[in-house]
Image (cartoon, rainbow, N blue to C red; front, side, top):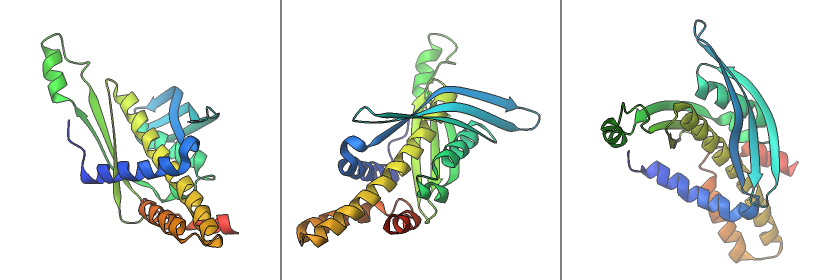
Length: 211
């Protein structure tokens, strides 16, 4: 499998900033009870699933999600954005730019010696256009193409939801530091915020927060 690209390394660096800001309130996303309906003639996919959102405090929220699209990735991505965009406005900026599935060739060679090799790992790669001229990649690896696709979409949504929440938190921290004349903290939080605003536009969310 490929080594991580500079864009992936940058995304991971930003994710660590988000984790630091949100601490135990960092949200983790997973999908349970996924049902897929394929209209092969009409080339349409319908999905229904249960989205689990948990934080490090052990709190959990469950969403029932339904949607459709052309293929599992399109259907799930559309459904999750539609469900969450009311609470996370920046999700409306996102578009899927590229989508690839590849087989782990080394894994395949090893497994062919033992059998057919059909249980080799696959890797799903998504590239998201953040709406601001930047492409952000996400990847997931699994024996199942569906499981890898679902995990890649979950990682994508998790990243952008937490990024928005971190930016809103940092905005409050900057304002508080300025009111207390803590120039050191104001500078630190501003620097962290600047690292995250390149992920996508948070203009609508920040405007709503100040109203």
